[in-house]
Length: 123
Image: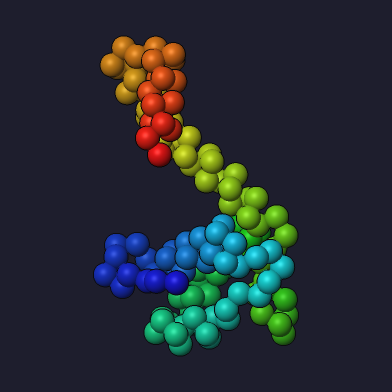
């Protein structure tokens, strides 16, 4: 995990996003324990209440759960939920605006498909 203390993004949101990214990438597998609030706060010198606030976002999203006396664990299906959320965001953030811009340029659906295929050819 890496935190930017000079970022405009709140630290608690950075905590939530970093843990979510670790679940998405498989670094924190479903059913496994994630580092405790204390561990994260000590390692990165972040207030424990800030770390807990970030973790609570993920609890509300049902990505992690607290097991009393044991700690926080990644819930079953968490990675699938994150992928679904990111696909929706991808559409809203990229695809929708791409279509709007392509219409402004007078590109047809077929033109856009050719451009996308051309882009995949440059990988």
